[in-house]
Image (tube, rainbow, N blue to C red; front, side, top):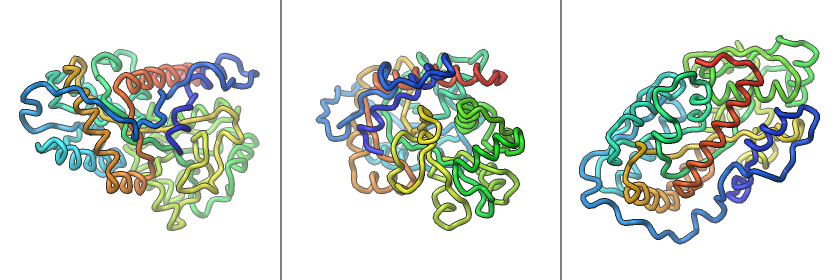
Length: 349
């Protein structure tokens, strides 16, 4: 997926239009959800000077998910490279719970000096959308620094599944409402909401099986105890390549570069588009000079050949943008997932 393609994400617009009018074809004009990212990596950057003395001590990068998952893998890569760039240790602290909101809340309430960072994933606006009374404002109390990488989800089935394609899955679900189930890391996770968006747009009913985490959902699918799985390439690609999972479709707008032969959900359900991402955030109110300094260092880091290679190996594509662009994107994703939650009558927590 090229940066120019990501720039044209219209998931928020398309979902809003589709959910507002069931019979209308989603327009390709209007609100652009993801931020003009084109050429962001190559664009010359004039970084603001950091606050004198920053960083003055070890940085903490809060990963809001458990050790060993795809987010944790990304967090440790970022911590290593950011530490090298800033010449201070960056320690990963896993604070899992509430779909990532426990860790996010910790960062939101930290001292706004740029020493406490948040690994922000596509789950962040999804979990925030599900919350009835969040302990912090997801837009104001966590400030975005930059996008790092983005990737679609892949819809997978066990290797021995009778479902050979995405149309097979939809056809079986239409003939047998409630017969197919899917596993996710929990209620309100981005994989859960992605599947519910599919259910709504396809007019089908499949059963959600929440588990204790992404690794558990993956294990249940590998064992054949659930029918399908929306999973990030970070975890699913090795099993697809080894033949233990069968990939049916990707959720992006364009063909997924590592698997160009893989169909897209949007080819069958026009307008369907879901991407997840990895980004960096800090406590809201952190001095702008610090935010811009971190943004400039991330741009340098994401352009390094070894980092590019590793991000691609993990199933994503390197992406960077400005703090303002990333803040706007998160706000639009929050709006999109609220609409899905309302349409599917998912109970907020």
